[in-house]
Image 1: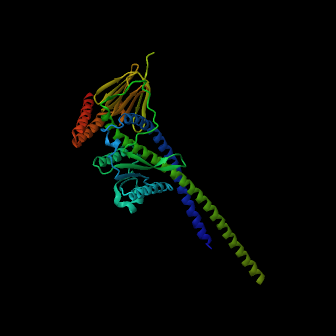
Image 2: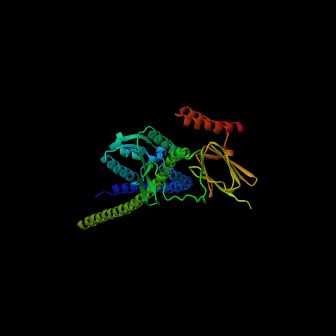
Image 3: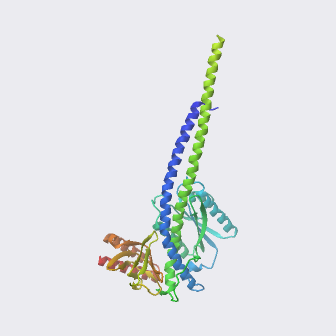
Length: 293
Length: 131
C-alpha cells in the first residue's frame, strides 16, 4: 500500500502532465485552423492546374513524343517512395500509420523483385524507417527549421525528385502522406506522381466549338507544365500533412487530458481512503490505550 | 454595356485576384498578349514580367515570375509561379531574381534550357531598366 506522501506526489505529477497535454491540445487547435485555411487557399491553383493538365493530356494521348513525365519510362523496375511525416511526435498514431502503410508497400514491391528507393520528408518518418530500410533512403529532409511550410519547400523536393528522374534513377514515384478528411479522420494515402496520372473527373470548359491555340506548341507547354504539376502535388501533400498532423495531435492530446483527469480522480479517491484508514487506526489505538488503563 | 472578362490570378499559395475586368496584358514567352473579353481559347506559357489589368480607367500592375495562362470562354486564368503587386516590387527584389536567373543560365545543360533561362534574364533586365 502506497503511503500518503507517495500518493500526493503522484497526484501532483499527473496534474502537471495534464497541464502540458491541455496546452498542447490548445496549440494544436489553433495551428489546425491556420493549416486548414492555407490548404483551402492553395486549392484554386491546384484545381486550375488539374483542369489545364487534363485538357492537355487528353489531346496528347498516344503521342509518341509525349514527355516522359506523363508517358513514363516504359519500365517499372525502380520505385521511389516519398514519405511525408511530421517532425514532431505527440500526435497519436499519425506518423506510425503513414510509416506502416509505406512499409507494407515496400514489402510488396520487394516481393515482386523491384528496387525501392526512399526519400523521407519529416524527421519522425526518417527515425522510424532508418532502422529497417536505412540503406534504401537516398535523401532526407525535414522542416524543423522552417516556421511555415511554403511552396519553396515543395519546390525543393520536386527539384530533387525531377533531377533523379532525369538521371534515370527511378521509373515510378509515389508520394505517401496523411490525407486530411476531417478533424477526427486522417487517411494515410499513397499517390503516384510520376508518371503523372491525368486527373480524372475534372471539368473542362466548354469551348463552344472553338479549339485551343497554343503558344508555344502543345508539347512545349506540357513539358513546362508537368514539373510544376509534380511540385504542386507535393505542395498539396505537405499542406494536408500539416493539417492532419495538427488534427491528430489535437485528438490525441484531448484523450490524454481526459485520461489524466480520470487518473487524478482515481488517485484522489485512493488518497482519501488511505487518509481515512489512517485516522481510523489512530482512533482505535487511542481507544484501546484508554480501555487498557 | 460591353462584355467583361473574367480574370483570375492564382499563385500556388493562394488566389491573388478574381475580378471582372476590361483588358489584361500578359507577358507570354513569345511576346505580349493582350486579352479582351471573348478572346479565342488559348494556352500560353509566361515569362517574368508585369501583368497589366485594366478596369475602366483604372490599371493595376502585378509582377509574375513565369507560369501559365489559359483563356477559355469561362475567362482568363493565370497560374503564376510567383506573383506580387507591382507596388511591393523594388530594385532589390529584381536584382535578387536577376542573380538567380544568371545562375540558372550558368547551370543550364542543353540549348533549350539555356534559351529559356536567357529569355527570363532578358525580361528581368528590361524590367530593371524600366524601374
